[in-house]
Image (cartoon, rainbow, N blue to C red; front, side, top):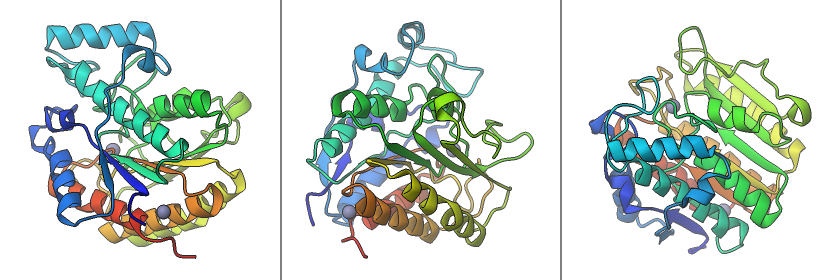
Length: 315
Ligand SMILES: [Zn+2]
Ligand SMILES: [Zn+2]
């Protein structure tokens, strides 16, 4: 039904991106154009950038001030050399977070069933550091909004990016929030975390499900891993809302990851998660962007995912 899915889009996504590769910055604009061209039944929403107070729900004041100062200085890197600092990087990162906060409020507040922020999913950012093209962790900020403003406690986070969600995992490791990640894992592959032995600590013990996959994992192996573990874990958790980070850098041909997934695999995963959201939590589903380094392919895969969750739910 039209009007049940929000496409949250800030024009700042079209500016210089958070990665050092200018060739990938176009992916947001291409996605927006394709969503319009295909006439998807979504409502385009323009979010407010997040303010400092909102960032402090997940990040230290020291780190937020460091990013703001680096943004004013306008050169260098925010980490060891992956995530560039440039004039306006703070504002750019605040737009990503603001869009995720906006999507969280629209869905948890009941105005929409689903929301997609292509500019979000920045899962490598930690409480006090940047990493892997991620400045602020908009997923964790959205979790804090859901907990504090909407009193949600059973929040499931699924991360399908080709890289492990080290920032999201670290920031939520001791909390009973379900965190599932499927990612390439092996010696020398970034970020190095995400083994099956990392299962959570304290109150979070048993709430972290890592599904590490080898280089060259193809669609058949990925589907088997997904269907074998993920729906059962989400059903067992009985979430009030599902968050899905939709990095598509596991697609065959992506230059950074080296997995071999098809666009149809992303459709299939999105359809399964969409079905679970309607089965378990009134449809509440928040989608975030993430990795993906061939702009046209990223736009195609994200649009396919969005199209899938716009379909009427099939029983
Ligand atoms: Zn990635
Ligand atoms: Zn739906």
